[in-house]
Image (cartoon, rainbow over all chains, first blue to last red; front, side, top):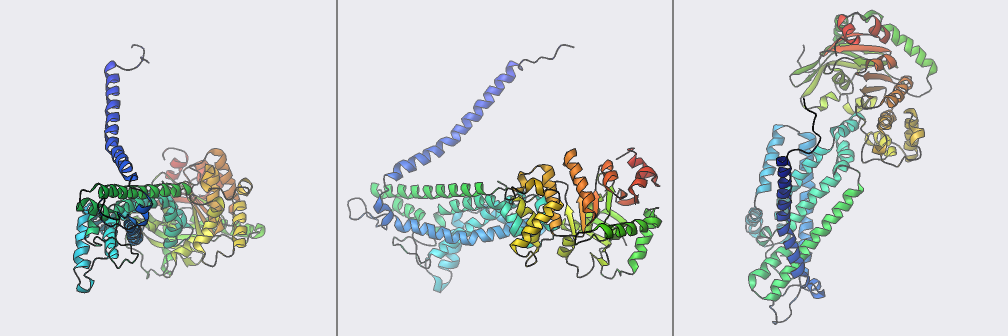
Length: 294
Length: 307
């Protein structure tokens, strides 16, 4: 029996190792290139459109040299308000659904049916929710036959709901069973176990999931085109037509090839990007504060 | 009767007979089982300073199921008040399931249920109109792996039981502070943590975490404490501390401890019960179980022939 060799393995193995490392590195770079390019273009083209007027005036739709160019005030405020309403609807309901699935119906057939529908809903294209709300709320009922901000918020909420519910369920399942047992064995009623033990432990993950849903909804155009229509004035009344960033960007690009309008569309895209960026940082800060499951 | 879920018409009069029959079958040692109860009670009566006292627990014809699997088969067993009873037996013999029946945690598992009765003094914890939450306040539990609440400080962990269970009963802040200190002292942890009560409970060492969990359990002032292999995740020094603690705690609580470690059973338990495949094989004073067991299976197990 020969002595065991402690030198490196065969040349072929070493070659394979090097090749595999390179393949992975190249794949990573390939994935990053479009991402970096998108951010670069949006920042580059969008930043030049940002000025005081951009944030303080409503859109006018005027091309360069045809009067007041306006800004995107109504679109920015509209997006914030509509997404806030949609979140207020979708996040509590989504988390409630997830709690129902994890805390009360784990493994039951009814739970599986609900979970299946949530998965299907996650895959439904956004425009379908737009059409649904359009048919049901915009033209469906004669007295309600008008575009309105709250209808857009409902379309977005429908879109967010499965994302929130599914991500919350995954996070709640990560909360160790031993914590629930510890609390139950102390003589805590189940609702208190959920409120005081399970939810705090899952909070960072719940926030991340909710923010994913918000980020997704903030950029959706199709459901809003059918529900809030396009308008330019600023309003805080969700019963009125409202403006939003995605629809305003759509409108700018749709109406002409004027460089001024296109530049303002880039500016709007940058605002969306910045909003999502800020939300993400906020979420990270919050989850770093609480010592729980990440 | 096995396999039929508990019904309310299983009258309490019928149960003691069944229980006695079960014990006759399962435990040859039944006749003298009354003695230690009386002895302990009088002894505890002299030395006791604390306000609470342990209560006796009597299992009668207890059956536990996981769906169709029959995990506990007609066990009858007396846990004397203010005594430590060790449950020993090979893995999967049902010792953990059995103690989880005593605070009704068993039924938290989907599909799991029990039949038979468990009397806490004169109340059947599986009786009608019994609030499972109240049962768990009277019968505390310490788990195998230390499980302090990760989002809470040391103080809040101990106070958790009071806050989680208390609406009003939790009482004023001052009150909670006293209870937390008393519980931490009771768990022998106060001196180690008194200067860092606001630090997270998961920052403690494993042994300290387990004593924190014991403090959390006694803060609710139960009468019975169930311990499911409380030392299996601890090193020998931490184990020793927990064992010393168990010895102190029994003046105030009835303790049931599940253990894989026969030396541990010999060290801490007044009474030892040996289980095998869901059945109670033998129960008796610890010394006798380890030296002169009457069942050959017990002898094989305690002498290390299997298990």
